[in-house]
Amino acid sequence: MTTMQAAVFVTLLFIALAIPFIVRSIVWSRFINQMKKGNAQKALSILQSKSYKLLFSEYDQNWNILRVYISLGDYKKITRQVELMFQKPLSQRQTYQIASQTYFYFLDAQNKEWSKFLLEKIKDSNHPEEYEYDCMLYRIMIEKKSQDIETVENILAKKKKEVVKKEDSQEQIFHIGLLQYLLALQYGYQGNTAIKEKYARKARHHLKNTPYSKKAKQLITHS
Image (tube, rainbow, N blue to C red; front, side, top):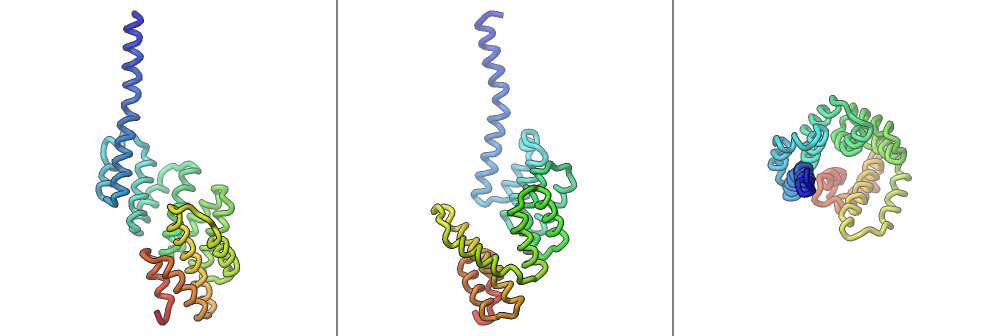
């Protein structure tokens, strides 16, 4: 083989190896663009296409389908997809990813069985701080206990003092509203209507344009 032939062979080999990565990048970009536009059905059609299935793992496909359902807030489809994914062999990282991202949806739906199951998966993932926080959420939202008022008030005080980038400000506002909602729930369990409604009003304001604004409103007797 001449030097020229060898150079051509190497060039063609690199091109052949690069093509799958290029196509993978194109398919992924199409999916992300549809997600950004809020086109759930088009995003799903990409995930279910032959090219996606050829270039991505089964877990990647199932995980991104779950992401679409989460973006839609479709509890029934989220539940069905999580059930499907836990029927497959999963690594510890994958197990944690699913549990961490969906735990709150099952808490919110008052699904005690799934909430407890996912909480155990988070416990096994070696994320102690997250596990402790999630246990607190379980006590408040599933067990209807009010023992974490002081803890939530301390977290809220720290959250309000945090300096965040402009692009993260909406996320911070949501977290503040959610903590206020958790306080409203706990004071409600204690029968302290005045403080419950005080926090519920604040939560409703900070959770504007989210499903939790309506939930906070339901805690207010005279809105």
